[in-house]
Image (cartoon, rainbow, N blue to C red; front, side, top):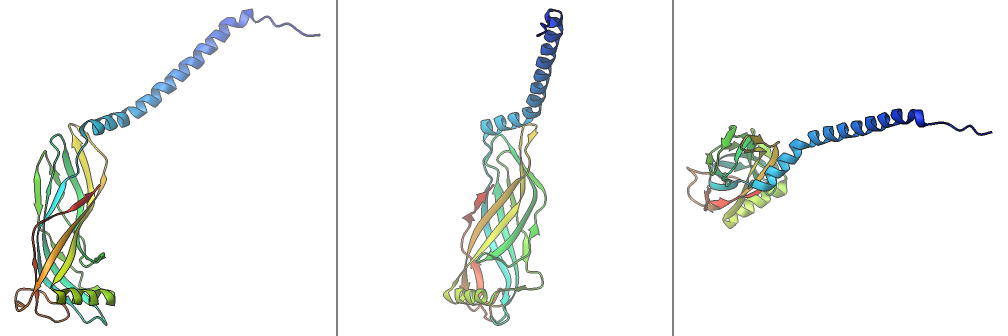
Amino acid sequence: MSVMKDCGEHKGCECECERGKLSRKWRWALVVLLLHVPLVVAVVVWLALRPQKPLFYLRDLSVLCLNVTPPASAYLFTTMQATVAARNSNGRGGIYYDKVDVYAQYKDVAITVPTQLPVEYQGHYDQSVWSPFLQSMDHVQLPPYLAVALAQDETAGYVLIHIRVDGSVRWKVGTWISGPYHLQVNCPALLTVNEGHGSYGANTGGGDGYFRFQQAAPCSVDI
């Protein structure tokens, strides 16, 4: 025998339950919206202003010392001074250079230890120039093939060194400051080898040539 339930007296309770569920859904929706507001604002600001990458140039590279022992042991001793310029190409935003290192590479092998640049802020269209000294830590042991390649390049009269800039930057637009972005810069430096000026320069494998930087060159920038 089935029992008929009279739900009439429960209609008010059911309505209250439905209103409670709906209220909770709206509260959760509001919480989710508030959590995403900063992200949405950041995306809108970024898309509206589209900050541009800074422009980097290698102005000069002075090789004060570059000595390589014979290929059998292949130890390298070097001291260089690189002059690197960076320009903020944004008219509406600034750039914080939080932690940026500079070092030299030869054929994708680091030949100096990183030298950290001072923390700096670039305003709209500002330019910064750094001239860090780059040195090997006591000595850098090169693979024998690399020492041979360097000697061959010196004999040919041209050596290509890459000055690398690696670090962290942040964008500032109005009062909004972005999170950190990884900065990677590659500056090719073509050096010619001149004989007969050993009193000023460097030598590889006991030679008396020295290296002269050819001309200022733009760098590739990846963020």
